Length: 189
Image (tube, rainbow, N blue to C red; front, top):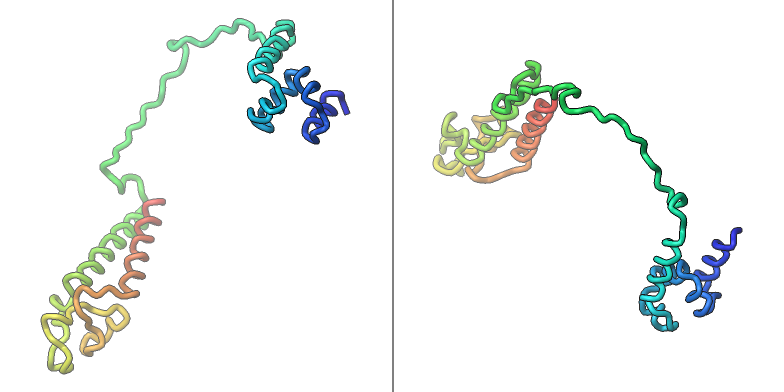
């Protein structure tokens, strides 16, 4: 191990005296960063002295030893020598432009599915299809049970297929999420 590594290890282990820390500006700066400014003041070292000593130590180094690489003069290309920037004609208005037919169908199908599902929840497909009538069951009231339940869509002649408008069930949520997935997957293609 080098002497600098040993001194740093002793600083971290707390084996250096305040005098030894004060004599080495690098160690004093490290001690200030590691243990804080209060520690430096408690052991009697002025922060200004350590900073001045550190600046003096690095100002004594020759200019060749600063690890700064001197870049030779290079002829940089002038703007007229550089190629033109490509101009992209992006039409943000047309979402469907350049998409395959299947992706377009996915996005349209997803949009129609969401609109249909929301229309069923808030208006009710029963307004289009007849809904639940008292002839089906005594609990059917024409004005309220107009929402089609998706799990019983094949039994529209039964009162179980209809529920109150405005009620939101798990099948409605699954249908909306599925339609959103269709739109998203079509958009990505």
